Image (cartoon, rainbow, N blue to C red; front, side, top):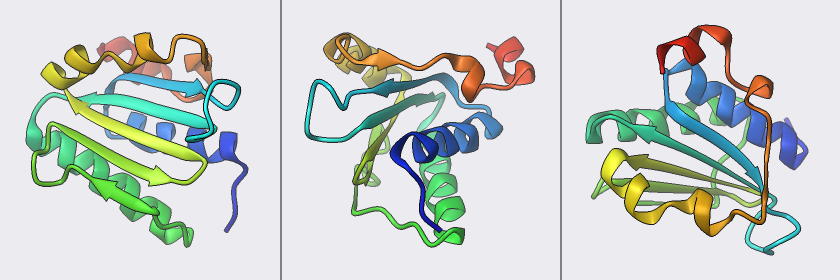
Length: 126
């Protein structure tokens, strides 16, 4: 199965939302970098949760025949980066998320409206 970059970013965000990821953010960066079209950024509350989020994204996308070009950070579990070519997924623990502050670094990108990927139930949890 093939997805357009925005569709893939939203699919990933919805997978993470279903797992109760917090601080979920999808940013269009196509106009400010050649690295990717979208960044999906989220936070796990523990190293176990960070790994579980990454594993879930990889598992669900693999069911659609989509595999990452590269994954980095499984050993540290403080920041796992998953490169799906047009979409890069950043899964942080709380400390690393605050330290690297990617939303500030990529503030020239366009943050998508949460209503496109966050359910009402998960928004109430935060």
